[in-house]
Image (cartoon, rainbow, N blue to C red; front, side):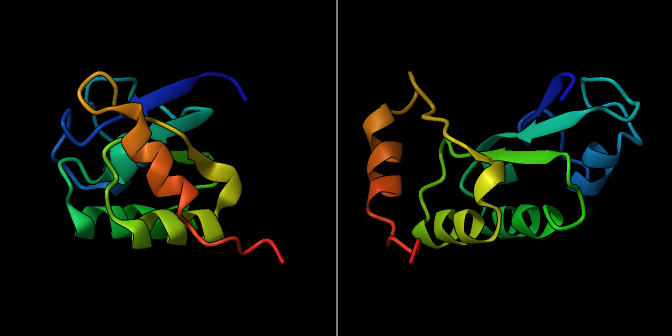
Length: 114
């Protein structure tokens, strides 16, 4: 997989497509990368529209992954895990947020494995 580049909305306020395509400098390399990990589903702090936009962008960017820290909305966790189960990483947000908050949010999701 090469190396991963961490992207957080705290670091950059430009459209996420530009961060993912590497067409501008938002604190990291500006060239194409092997993979990208987008913190907080791309919606920090708790921005629902950005989280939804980032889940949609997973269809376009095969080398992009999301992590779950500070994602407090069940519908976004469930949607991302159903649509892209292999592209969601657990992130707790510790020490700013207790890890059990994210663990419980994931544990209460319905089992759709049937």
